[in-house]
Image 1 (cartoon, helix red, strand yellow):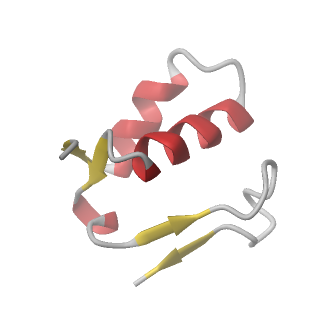
Image 2 (cartoon, helix red, strand yellow; image 1 turned 135 degrees about the vertical axis):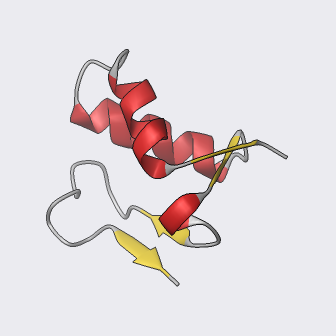
Length: 65
């Protein structure tokens, strides 16, 4: 099982090294879906899906309860 982190901490850590927003989203998604990290805090036990790269902000990404 992966390390438990908040979404905010995960995005902040990835953002320090990523070249852009698309890379942040892709990396965070990969880390979550491969089980490298588990989300804690407000996103704990929620599914995070992203339909396509660049869809962030266009209401295509979803967080399900």
